[in-house]
Image 1 (cartoon, rainbow, N blue to C red):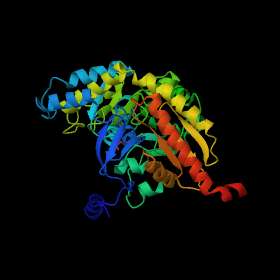
Image 2: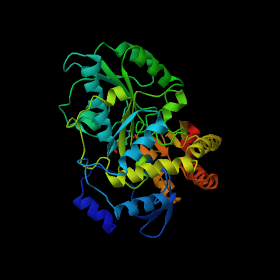
Image 3: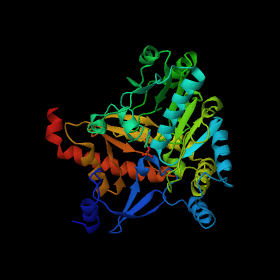
Length: 409
Ligand SMILES: *Cc1c(COP(=O)(O)O)cnc(C)c1O
């Protein structure tokens, strides 16, 4: 076995099941393995690398700042954090932002904010606040967050979990209406369920959620860690519904593919529930993160990556539909967040990912039956054509291998 893989297996926890490739370099949409083979990265680190690998402007911002001032904690003011927070508030239309590092921490921040808002502003009786979440959600891996999950494996062996969460079916506005009580603090929802297999809710769902939440004095919190930062062809996916949520969680691509940078954003009334000592993070909002986050937003806007994601996402889905492969049962997505649902009678999504890898395309299965296609937003149509050709090749070959089985179907 490859020595690198061997030492990861020997000394690391067995909490991931990586494809058998050792990556050593990345540039733009490409990564290279230890044998010098080049791959197109159609995973983008679960959408964290929307700007492409080692974007020169982002690397320069990071290294310049690293030579100047990197970490001082929030015990002091620094010259960059305010600029970053101002920028993200201007771009999203929200009033205030609280910086964290990982997505899960920003989601935890949202849960704390919603609960404290419920007690101090909405006047919910002490310890009675409820937060509504959706079946099939993915919001991270902390104890509270896996406690909200409907995925048995994410929860199994990790209880007991904090109470105060109520689960409803995703995309079902009636279920939300029925779940809201006078003690409901918030409804936390993903505009598209990424980890659940790129599940797109019915058109107008978020708009209906926003109206219902507003009517009942319930906060609408969208987890845009994966769908935000232009991934779906708008800066925030909630813009497709023409709404501004009360609270938004961002992460992943906010770190420009270089650092973990996350934010909890909200209207003023919600953020104002926090007072010094209520919440914090040693690294949250550090100088490196602030500069990289600010530059990540600037690059997205100045390089027109959001328009590009909208246009190329439509193109990608159209081309994939034209393949008419009997191995694919559904193609879903928005912008450059696309899922191919594979007919599990013939192949697992992982088997097809391994075949794609041999054709120079890297991606990873989600939930066993879905192949995720989420390239860096800097990809060009020509580069996408090469990927589509590789997918077409793999599907045709796979189909031939199973020809008799498919013929009987
Ligand atoms: C990835 C993800 C998270 C968790 O982010 P981490 O940085 O891994 O903690 C939360 N919500 C959604 C929608 C995600 O895709």
